[in-house]
Image (cartoon, rainbow, N blue to C red; front, top):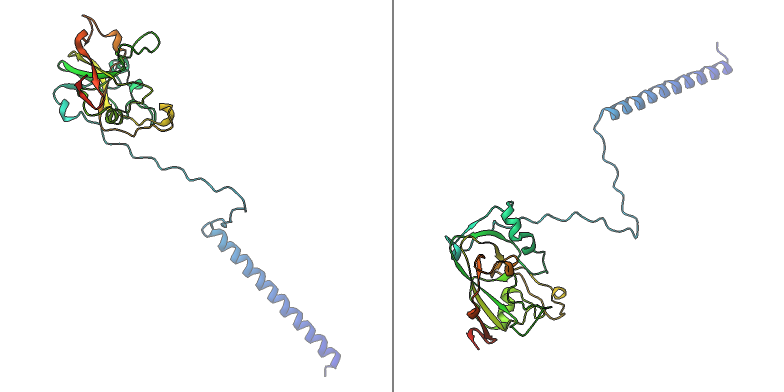
Length: 244
């Protein structure tokens, strides 16, 4: 017959063995779970809130969709042909000088064209008594196929002409010969900084202009720009179509 001491010893031994078995099974379960986690999909990193006072992360700006392909206006159909903009002729015509960034005037977009027939071109200028350096601005680069009309104020809006650039008091009408290569396109916006006048600026215009590179070198018998002496006249600022 077991004594009380022997029975207590046996009970303690069984308790220790049970605890050891539970420890073994717990370790096996932990190891098995770890192996499953290693085989599972990678987990995303935790999302952390930005630190207080940190600058916000800037998003990349969206790329603007390109504008529709520029086409020759219907009024010029059959009168001009488009020249490859990558050709030497296009470079000589001054495409990079004619098309400018927003706020700088010039053209917002441009086409290099060759005239298929003689065409009239018109320019407003500051008159024979106003000199810019040693010359007048009669033969500047900016012209139009349309004869001047309307008021001086509206003409400035239509063609983006700052008051400090041109007085618009005289007009000249010339003939651009067939075969001449020029740049045509709608007018670009003009900022107050470009006008050097805080109260004067102009938006993009749908009025097309003609850019003639170095027109003063293209006059004369051998040139493609013919401006007779009687082609100039003073204009009425309230009605540019009327001569003073």
